[in-house]
Image 1: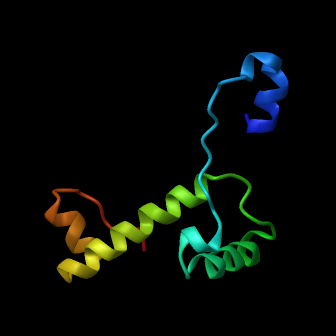
Image 2: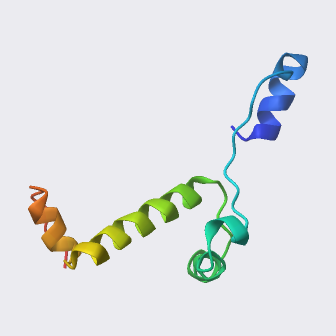
Image 3: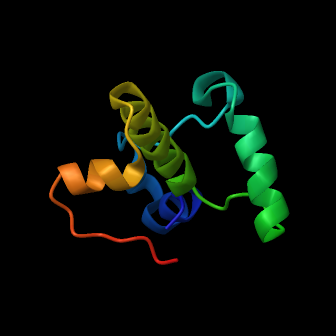
Amino acid sequence: MHQNQFIEAVGPAVVGFRICYPDVSPEVMGKGYPAFVEKYKKAYNEAPISNGHANSYDAAIMVLKAIEQVGKTIQACLEAAGANVRPSS
């Protein structure tokens, strides 16, 4: 349920309730974020429809930076973590 739908559904009971929503502005998301949104639009013919993409974007960036710091491939990191995961191709 989006915040506007929630507010309409609960009416006056919403007073005092905190609605948290990530700031997806380019200033907060970083310099690569606008390019990410453009690539997303090209791939799916629409802009991201919820804030979930921002959390996933952050998680992917953290994983890639961690891999970069240890100088390993994603596969090597998964194996080092004990994951029994193989590429699908």
